[in-house]
Length: 263
Image 1 (cartoon, rainbow, N blue to C red):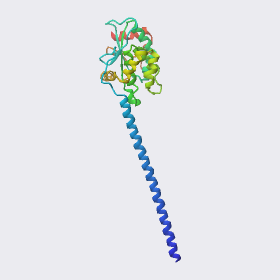
Image 2: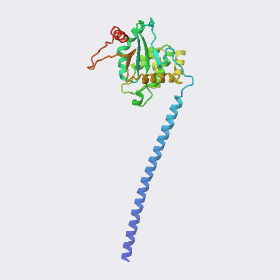
Image 3: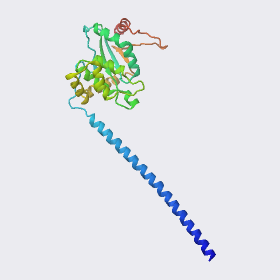
Image 4: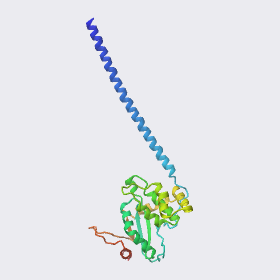
């Protein structure tokens, strides 16, 4: 009887251990299953969000070219005083609105460029690239380019272009729709009916194909970086191999460099 009792206790203990092990396995499986379900939910939510964004970003069939747009996908800077003559040197600037060097170049040389344009000494065309979106995984090169083209449609390209760079995020944080649709237009004086038109052009991405053309020209021309300033077939060199400044940020120095490249 004592032996049978001992065997029964051992059998009961073994059964209890097996039961606990099965319970542990079931808990692990349950936890794994819940994790998998959560992952699926996250993936589905991500897909839904992307689809929603895509719907909100739906491109209008009525694609347009801004008033001062070119076939190459650039925008001509308009003069506030005297228009350039046909034989004035033509400067092409390749930029990306998320490029820190472009913002620095605009801050340093932008006033001199506008001075030369207003004097009729040169003509200037700005072509926008969007290659930095691949590095930063966003669309904050394209959206400001579309917004700048919309600003051209209401006569505020120059001011809006400078405002974008003045508000560039130092860590590559891009631009919000709030900035592009409301804050920047307000800063440059776009209001009333012009604001309504600007926002409609931006919301419907009426200049998406135009911006795409500018980026395509950037690639077709073999431009390797931004900012790049080109006169004819010559790229302006602002510093030498020792990082010594070759072109001072003054209208006279910049014009001399442009004229030398044109010659």
